[in-house]
Amino acid sequence: MPVSSGSNARKILLIGDVSRVFLDSEAVRGPGCQVTTNMSDAIEALAKNSFASVAIVMSGLSAKLSPALKGLRDNCGAKIILLAQMWE
Image (cartoon, rainbow, N blue to C red):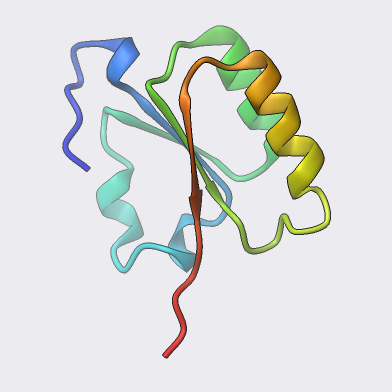
């Protein structure tokens, strides 16, 4: 995910356990990405910063996913991306 670190509008917010969807989860922890492990921290980050995209790790959020997505859609202008773990 190449992201320019000079612009807040190009930042990506990743929500959840990124190690479940990326082989190298440390690679996405650069200056253009902010990682939060839970939805309440993500909502706080969205209130304080501007993001181009919000990527949500779906595993672990299934029970709360629908209301969380509705809340994000209603309060966030960023693109919302759902991340899933691939199984063989």
